[in-house]
Length: 152
Image (cartoon, rainbow, N blue to C red; front, side, top):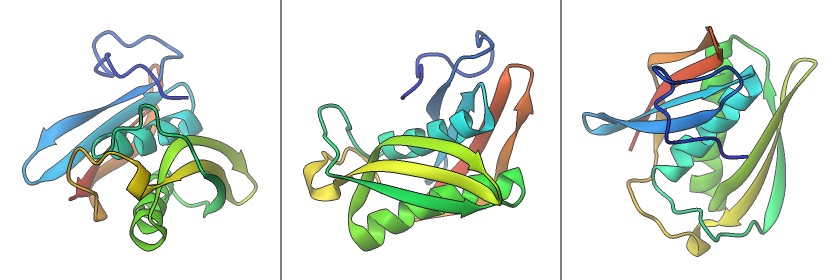
């Protein structure tokens, strides 16, 4: 499900493409993601955040977790979903290796294939919290895009 991370999400993006990238940010991590739908953009944001600190290549999931994220504004959905990933990492020691999301009445149904953090090579600073500063998830000419700063 991971998208094309070679494109920067702007200049050469085409309709229907999805992907993510980490952007340098003072003392924190900035993730930009894009997708054809709101749900695909959210999936890419999760993968972008996880890939900023973990090497998922060759890692196999050990369980699947289903999470319901309550409907709110689009920005609320982005923050809530990434907060859930941080919570699962800190409390349960789980790292998403694959993610699917679909809209349901009252919110978003998210399925995360997870691996134990001890089985995942850690390559960077682990996220601690999601910042509301300059957080955005919105439609754009190619589908949806988002940006978020993550405290590490």
